[in-house]
Image (tube, rainbow, N blue to C red; front, side, top):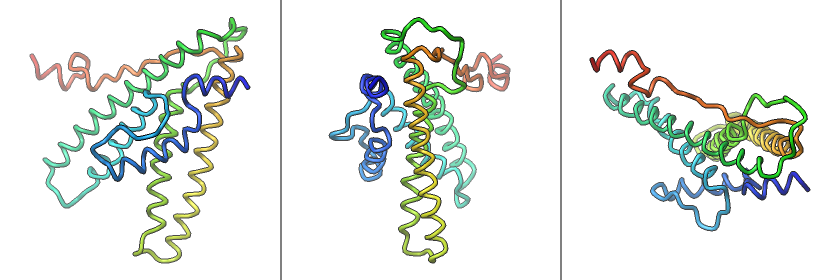
Length: 206
């Protein structure tokens, strides 16, 4: 009951199905972030949206039929989206910690988790993109039966891996709720985007 309560409070129940619906919607409504009739933690939804945009920029970056300037533009877009994605993970973790702190008992342990809840949600959203595109690949008209079988096998593996990730999130939140683990915030401090920390940037500004 506690596990369900924590997920419900954070509005993270049914993330797999929610992300599947969002990704399918975004692929047919690429200019619209707002997904009708979807109840989900807005920070988690924003994170999934950033990963959706990143996925398609990464596809563009693999093209070989355009000049280097076009790829450079895409790479900068990827860099910007990655920074936004990392910021979103931290915001989600902050919101989760605030909620956990309201009801979690005084911890009787120093146990921590190597991955934060926000990072797990990030991985679930990326896995959901893989599920969508692997399913799409398995339905192509221009593939042979061996290709189709391989894609369907990979799709099943991806779905299982995503299920395991979600269960890990459920367990981690329960561990926080019951005091079996303590939650801490971890900052990325990405240096390459900071003109005061990246030597290739601050040297050119002098």
